[in-house]
Each structure stands twice: as structure tokens, then as C-alpha cells.
Amino acid sequence: MPPLHDRKAELAFLLSLLRRVDHVWLMAGASIFLSISVTVIEALGLFAIVPILESIGSRPLGHENTALDPILGLLRNADGTVSIERVAYLLIFVALVKPLFTFCASYAANVLPIELRKVIFRDLVHKQLRTRLVVLNKEPTGNWTSAYHNFISSVCGIVSTFVGSVTQVFLFFLYIGIMWIASPSAVMLSVAFIVALWLATKWMADLQGRIGTAITKTAMEFQQAALQMLQGMRLIRTIAAEDRKEKEIYARLMAFVRYYYHAVAVASLMQPIIALTSGLLIGTMLLYGDSLFDGAQADWLGALILFVVVFYRVLGPATALYGARISISQEWASVRELRRLFLLCDDNLVPRGTALIPEDKSKDLVVDGLSFSFDDARVLNGVSFRIPAGQKVAIVGRSGAGKSTLAMILARLYEYDSGSITVSGVEISQIDHRHYAQHVGYVSQEVVIFNETVRENFNLVVPGIPDTDIWTALEMVDLADYFRSTPEGLETKLEEGGMRLSGGQRQRIGIARMLVARRAIVVLDEPTSQLDSHSEAIIQRSLERLGSSTTLITIAHRLSTIQAADQIIVLHEGRVVEIGRHGDLVRGGGLYAEMVRYQEFSAEGPN
Image 1 (tube, rainbow, N blue to C red):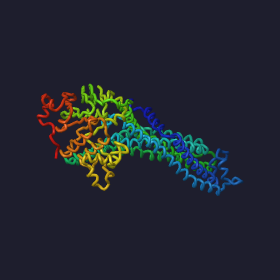
Image 2: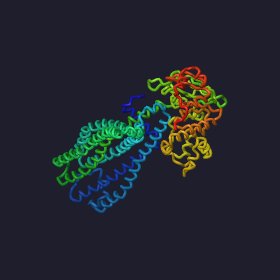
Image 3: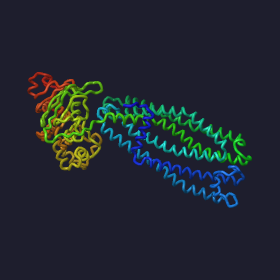
């Protein structure tokens, strides 16, 4: 993975995101154009100050012709006197037109961030869905949550701030130009003041950058702790750990809040510094006005009034540019973290493959020398076996033997380190991912139920599945009567994680979805672990209906399931130590016989 603290690479990443937005430069250009239009209209209103000052006997622009004379001439009568009526019309025009352009500019300024947010959301979801599961699982959930809720908002905020800064730069130089007409000397003094202020506050931007990194880190830690609290609520309640967990989460929250207060304190220094220094500057100009401005006192006082009005308008964009600098420094950590997550996904994409499983060949599954590790811990080591098409196979072993890991590898949820797995003679890593999923089904111990209706949960597996097929599958797992008794039927919302269902009902939903999918190879990871003996018998009868053409691989702990298997694969510490039928393995006196002897298999389900 490339270095993560590389400002040039981070900027290139941000630009790459922008380039994925359709018509991005048109949207940015429209926003800038409309904002500049508002600025120009506002400047027209400022020109009204000049004839008003002239009407009271002052010549703020001096007696010589200036670049503003063509515009100011429109506000004078034929004899050169000020037309108050025309000045009033100008102000009314500005009052009518400026709100319209302001609305359009404000609307346009928000279009690009919204479109960028959409693109980042879409790209991140796309990458996550195609990233190796083992890598996704190792990344704390709070980091992904922060990406969707905080990082993307901050990145869009940076872009919006930058686009707005382009307008502020134009506004700054426009007002500087107007001030130059009043007094070049005073402008030079003002620019020197602004540059000095910029350099003097550089430390604020650097400090905000460091604080922003700390805010991002503590926010992720707080969100991760809050998510773990929600996920582990049952354990927390059963061990009466509410107070301890609250104290832990509060400590993380306070770490986040402390850094946020630091950021607020630094940002709050800007306005007092500007107010103090600008006041000193204006006072200095008043003391030395006769040197900085031309003409008699009445004239240079008028020029000073015009200068001060415009100067305070200059402070607006100058302050905005200072604020943008500090804001971008503070939020830049989000760009860095979002780039890290994008790179994490890009470097760990699941191999998609292009090969297909031959339809005219027996779908034998062969595992040869399979090895797999979590980080540096070896989980499977040299696993080999062969399962002819249509066989019913049980994989058994003590806890930690690698059974569930093997099941997830067969389902292509994990990518193995070495060895090979073939279906119909084709290496599964070379098979098109979607094609493989159409032939191999998987039901885990923890069945995933989405916060959707019963129908939608089945539609996810088989798009457009008829209601009759859903009811048939529900009948096979003894759930049809349950849902017929509900007012909504198949429109019953199951809620996130299937909270309306018992553990056994959730597992039966998972098996029912697998039944309607009609896969050639089905991998079940302890599918009846939460079922009583009656429900288990129903499931077993349902599985028997799969027919001899379906290969059924079951991670099993029930003796009844194991005894009926065509072959039993015994795992121990990541290795295959025995393969055979129940009777042969019992007579062999090995690990399997020992597990049977010490009743390590369940004879029947819990009540």
C-alpha cells in the first residue's frame, strides 16, 4: 500500500473523486460565475457612496479622471452634479437583482457537494462489496461508519470551501482595485497588513491540522465503542456492566470533545486578531491621512471614508480565505482516512474470474493441499478431500479445528493462501463470481436477515420469485402457518437482524432461502444448532428433498446428521485426520471414535 501521509497523493485522490462526478467543471464553473456575479452587483451598490460623498463637497477619488468615471457618469446630471434619483434607482436595482443571483449562487454552490457525496457513497459501497471479507472484518466497524457519516461530509465540505475560495479571491482583488483608485499608498499599507496577518496566523492552520487528525481519530474510537455497546447489549445486561461500559464510552466521548474545544478555541482567535489589527490600521490611516491621500482635508476624509467602507468589505473575503485555510487543514485528515479505506479495498479485491462451471460434467468438488491463515496464525494446513457430486458430507471436529473457516472458503467468502479447490475440474478462483454463486449456496450459523419484508428477503436470493414458491419453502421449514397468521403475510417486516423472530426461526428462514435457490452444492454451517429436536427433524426432511443431484456439505454436531452422511471428514487443528463413514470411523478407534465415546456430539437438540 502506498504511503498514507502523502499530501500530493491525497490531493490527487481528491481530484480523482471529482473527475468521477458528471459535468463537475460545469457545476464548479456555474457556482463560481454566479458567486462572482453577486460580487459585481454588490460592487455596483458601493459605487453609490462616491456621488453621495461628492454631494456633500468631498472628492474621494480626487480631481483627476479615474477608471470609474464612465460608471459614475451614469449617476450624474448633464451639468455634472450628482443625480440622487439615479443613485436611488441604482440601489433599487441592486436590491432587486442581488437576491435572485444570491439564491442561484447558493443553490449552485450546493449541487457539486451533493453530487460528489453521491459518487463517493456509490464508489465506497461498490468497493466494499468486492473486497475480501477477511480484510473488511479486520477493519473496525466504527471506521466504516465514520467514513459514511463523517469523512464523506468533510471531503465534500473541503471541495465546497475551495470552490467558494475562488470567488473570495476574485472579490478580494476587485475591492483592492477599488481601493487603489482611492489611494495606492493606502492599498500598499493594507496589503502589507494582510500579508503580515496571513503569515502571523500560519501557525493556526498548522495547529488545526494536527487537531483535526486527533478529532478524526477520537471520533472513530468513540463511534466504535458505541457500536460495540449496541452489538454486545445482551452481554452487558447479563453481567450488569452498564455503569462500566457507560464510563468507558463517556471517556472516549470526552477525548473527542476536548479536541473539538481546542479546535473551536483556535478558530475563535481569528476574529479578535483581525478586529484588533484592522482597528489599528484604520487609526494609523486617520493619523497620516494627509500623507496617504491626495487633496484637501475634506477630499481625503471622503477618500478615507470610501477606503474604510471598501476595506471592511475586503476583510470579508480575506477572513473567509483565512477560515478556508484553517478549515481545510482541520478537515484534511478525513481525506487521508478516506483514501486509506479506498486503498484498503483496492488492494484486497476478491478475484472475479471469468471461467464457467461446465454444465455437462459431474460437479465433483476436490480440495487439494488447502492452506489458510489469519494474519500469521495458520488455521488450515494441507487440507485435502474429494466429494463426488450428489454426496451428503459431514465435516466434524472439535472447537477451533477450522470447520467454519473451511465452509466459508468453500463458499468463496475467504480466499485461501495455497492449494486448490476445483468444481468440475475448474479452479474456483478462476470461476466468475456470480456464476459460482448460482451453483454454490451457503447458510451460516448466524443467518443474515435484512430490515425488509419476508418477500424482499427471498427476492434478494431469487429475484422475482413467485409468492407460491416462497410459501412452499416456508411450508418445508414449518413457518408457513406462522406468517399466514400475521396480518401482513409475506409483507411482514422482519426488522434488522430478524428481531421479530426467534433464533430457530431465523435459521429456518435461512434454510428456506437456500431451498428456493436450488444450488448444485450447498454448504451448511451448523444449520440446526439453535433448533429443538422437532424443528431439526423438519429441517432434515426438507434437506432430504434436495435430491441426489445436490451435494450437501454440513458442518455438523448432531449425531443423527453425521450418521446419515455418505462420508465424514474429521478436522483436527486445521488438518484432515480421518475420512470415512460413521461405522468405519467408530471401529477405527481414532479421534472421531473418541468424540463419539465421550459424547461430544449432540444426540438431540435442546428444548
